View (cartoon, helix red, strand yellow):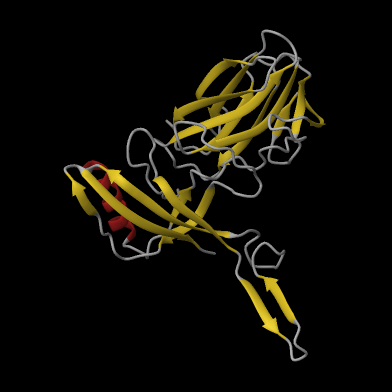
Length: 279
């Protein structure tokens, strides 16, 4: 099972703002004898045995954390032996759902659900979809943590939804590899765009999926949907579109061998930790 960068308290805190996130594309340029310049990228360009996307870099910033929270980070840093150890980083500014708007993508499995054409979304664009349940218990799901091992982690799933009929409800759930519900909630969906969300602390080390619908809440009706998101936080956070900025980064390490907290007051410590993703 993977080793995850820790959430340092019960609220699911990973880092504090402001923190920096960067993208590495590894572009090579060459000036030809005639004076023209050529450039090509090694990542996300379809090359064999190279990454199919950019790699990430983060400077995690902790401006005011407690002694207990520093102890969690120090224990993990020591376990990793600084730069040496490999871990999985769940980015709070990313999105664990592989296709947040394209509900026809292969990453979504659908049961008695038809995907309609693109429609107006809550931000004035045209990226929403009318999703129509065609059975008595319509539902759709996707995998967010394919390797599992995240028991005790805090996650939040969210979705913009707009009902076509009055009195609509919808269930949001986290489910395990056996399709057992880890945590779920049934929420009202009005006939105006509303962002619904559900926060849970995972009580399973199985691989984890997000389930939309089910529980008899989607019986043959249409619901406009946009922007499905899952983040390692108690709240939904700002929206991140995928594919583009994934939240799951399975090959990361610290980019320093120094753990240097600065004590600014009683039970108040500041700290910076750089992380890089590699291939």
